[in-house]
Image (cartoon, rainbow, N blue to C red; front, side, top):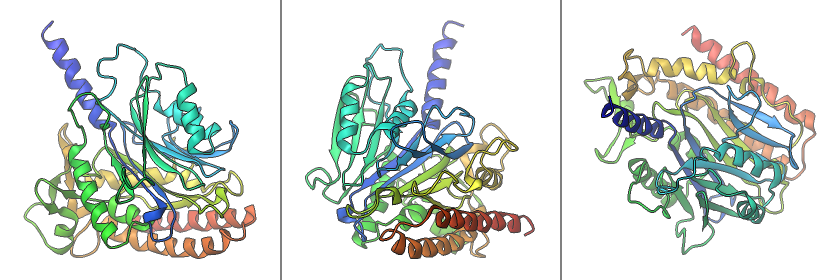
Length: 406
């Protein structure tokens, strides 16, 4: 038993670290087609039920991605506040290696505090300096403000290092990608290296075509099924052909079994209204959910489909997405989560979930861009945004309801 226990602990630790991995990026507005910065988090976690929540418990009101089980809203896993300050993170597993401090896993609490109190990158840096140490943090934080600031901060219990996406010496292509290791880490273990290799490839290709925009990040990056070691884009392969097997091993995809949501936050320009920062939410498994926009301008009445619902103990959109995800991972045994039924997402008949979701999203993108063209110049009344939320809520709810009868 003495020999078994340490092995079990090691296995459990590796499993947990796999589950709470993420793929993230920051993109400078100097390198996007419209001049607006973007931060992206594709969240992997051991809690599949996610919701969006409005908070007014700090200096600034903010919108945050939370676990639906977190009724008190004590942890926030990505979000933005009324000043245009936005933050997200990925866990880092090659820092705090030799640190004996028992304090850990405080990233969600820290991000909530940042959203409550910070308006600029300088405010965030001051928070890092004054936050009690050891921090209980091992993370890469992607941070953005309404003044054009955008950077990654590699943070551990005692120190932090800034990687400025506006600095061409640090980010020559205008973007920085992080998975689950830090460049400042003290050991050579690089968890998420395969996902980072994929991300570097797809970001590079998009940059060459001047397509580093929110639509690409949502529909191409957040639903990426490319494997760099095999050199195969399974999404393209299954969209155009009928391979012998419907299943593919998905553990090293950017979008995989442990992916529970994604946020794509698009900044305003310096002359625009900070609370019109756009938070594109993908609540639920990114390949089976619909992207919806949110803003801090107006009031707290965000679409009900994104909010926690006491009847289902989750957000309704997340529930829809989870039901579809179950069909994507139908193998009902302990190893089944390794294998994705790719034909459920894309196929030559164009009946896959992604192929049904993305036309709807394109309608939402077009309509939202039309409204933002006006709203960024003349802020809308709260009732206008609320009316738009109601329209989107019905449109997306009707979509999934109609799909049940297919």
